Length: 177
Image (cartoon, rainbow, N blue to C red):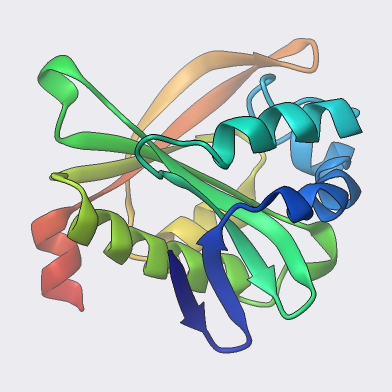
């Protein structure tokens, strides 16, 4: 898969993304805003493990955000099952040198459209930790709405944080386009 937007694109992972993945993912300012499963430090071994998974997905749900030089971030969905089978959790990160340029917002818009068009989804949602104001702005600009605040639901860096849930429904997204 490859979706271009301006000088950037969303594309499938490649093993050659390893060096850039380690370079940009090994950043405390990124990992502190994500689940603990996103390690810090982010090592070559972490990148190898992730790339084995990402390059061999049976159903491709994880992609990179890239510029002409290669990987600068990532975006993906976690398809839900059982009674939540028409929902997916979305997650993304962008390398710090590219923050504040609208890249994450455009990537999220393009990927949301891709997800609704390629999977049987009614709803896409994101979980954002307290203090991640930039991600909240990205979600709002991409058409997501804040649905809930889960008080002190996350334990990160030795303290409890609120978790915010943002979501968009397929019909709302299509109507807004």
